[in-house]
Length: 357
Image 1 (cartoon, rainbow, N blue to C red):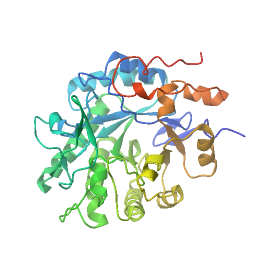
Image 2: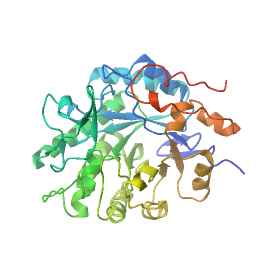
Image 3: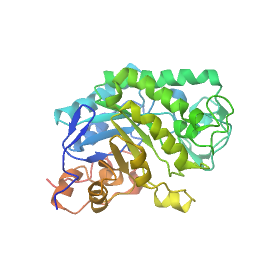
Image 4: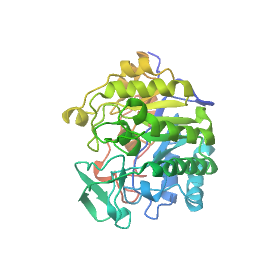
């Protein structure tokens, strides 16, 4: 059987050499919040991916919720990322930057004692990953309606920085229980103003952010990531299929580069996820669809063959296999990822996984 994964795909103005996408992967290897030479090596090793989506990158200090992540809101950050994009382009690779605001998934330790912000003052269950270790999440402060345009402006500013840094496009992170996802779901959004209640109101913030980012990039170089079945970071919704199908109907006229969908994972199902099948999302969304969520090679080929998606993003497999494209082509054995080195540290479990060659 011909490999669908290794066939070309047009995304926006770009011709991808394959449909094997490197998923955004938080690795916490930037202690000063500026991309390092070690990070350059890490991304360079994985340049054969059809498209790399960078690790999630905070758009502002307010958007930070994890230690040692690289930022994207000043000239130093831009200069650091330029080294990474240059390395990828030297190998004819493509890289989009993921833009991130964590909302309530943060802690006062990141904000000089101030509370994290969210659509509503609803505390998530679980613990924040802080410089002092794991600490209980706090009840966030509900954003005032007059603060929302400032956050939209932060997204636009970060999008401009990504353009200046040589990225090929940007992905808006609206998944995994972070700020934009918090506005979408009624389990975290109890607002009664123009940003809460109805589907139209709950998608408003994401659509405003998307419009601002499109002003910088054009729609065909902007992607959006969603996790409609996700329960990560204590997310829930009373009718997730309805709100997300409504969202996709609003996104269709924009002609974005792609929509990136995180499938339900075992943990989501264990936590009572209302699973939305790919068929419903594929039917609702008319554009290019990337899926991710624990796929192996066989399942990825199947989902492409069945037309349920156009490309597949891989996370943990890309952590452990910098030459994943080549290994899939040869049906070669895969390195096993070491979960103990996923977050923080040095080259161990980061740039020292062997390639075939």
